[in-house]
Length: 90
Image (cartoon, rainbow, N blue to C red; front, side):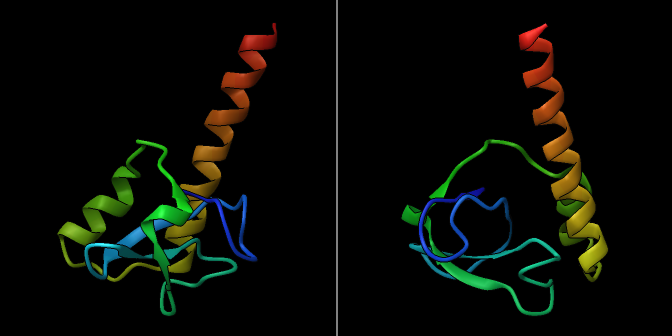
């Protein structure tokens, strides 16, 4: 999810939990650590339709998420985006 509003605008985050119908908890392991996720309104997020499988499995298996897990997932997605944009240019 990309943040569309606030001081974290244009940053990539991972949803780590659902707070209620209008809010989710997001973290990226850097600005927002796993131990202190940010509560954010869904309307302030841009959906990427990408699931970080390693994060999803950790949550489903009730394994504790680490900041390193989140950073790797965010960096992996950014690498895919940059590779896709590079292949479109070439």
